[in-house]
Image 1 (cartoon, rainbow, N blue to C red):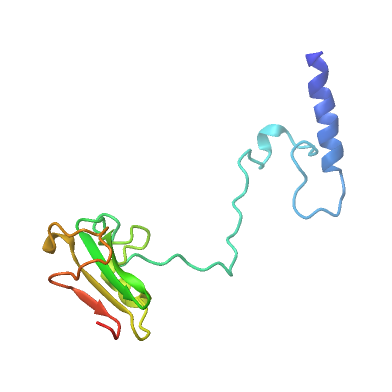
Image 2: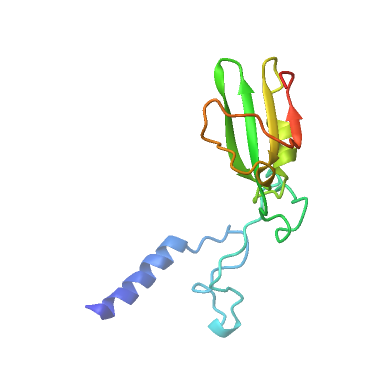
Length: 148
């Protein structure tokens, strides 16, 4: 039974590829009259060109070796109608190497009643980020918002 698989596969491959003369580029190696040793086709697929409309990846501000999180940051937030809260974050975004302090300045709300404070966790030993409402931070590094 196995001896018939290869000839049938070759027939199907030939039928699928066709022998049309209006194809762009050289004929596939299985249809060429040249010896196989001289064929320029390789088994590896050709690299696809990147679309020109793709957005370039953001360049890290530092090399990946120097932007690894080394210290934790506590971020305290005040939002109208919600108890004050806190969370602990690393000091860098690993994907972009952007500082957490810089990211907070870009993304924190600046509307009336909002306040965001950030400080090094090592400057606030024993701080409970799960407390509700969360306590204010000591030795604050970044303050954002009109309600601060």
